Length: 270
Image (tube, rainbow, N blue to C red; front, side):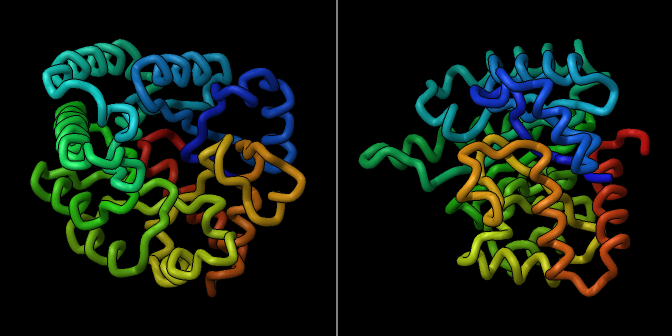
């Protein structure tokens, strides 16, 4: 069985095909998923979908770094209060805070300093909230590896997943030195021909630290890129299959371990 630990099934293109999306998941043995919010509205959509899909689906609520970088700094407190209200009212379904993090790749030229500061403020607020609510963080990080590590250390955030891993083994080692509750989720990026550092990381990581995801509808696995423009949770099977080719353990050992890791990280019953 496969657990798609990060997808956006409510997104345009998937939302209109819910029955088909779920049939495809079942056909590939993808039995569980976490629907990820990228803002308050999207978090509500992720929550609604998790209820519609039933007991094998959960959600995360948070604000993506590129979604907050142009917001006024004075709105951090109001956002955090609203986010906490949403989570507290739905603790049966919300299993993480996020996705949050830092993305210095998509900054606006001439406004980089302010946008970086705003991203850091919202990330810090969500890290503190996750700690207070005893929930893990779902982290998006791009072109901000050192600052991501520094912020997690500064705020004592030890339980987190680096989603859509796109860094290198040194980044992973630094985080594992900080906490034994940091996980690394591989996506379709793992399958791309130029993703050599990601593939190397997937080879050397302890198996008990690895999750798989799709980030659907984004990042279609390489084997399907010519035939599909949208990713979907069923394609977690292709991420898993590629991961198996990189590991020394037998296929069933890898699949079972990643399943166990996913349930343990989100603290849902196996």
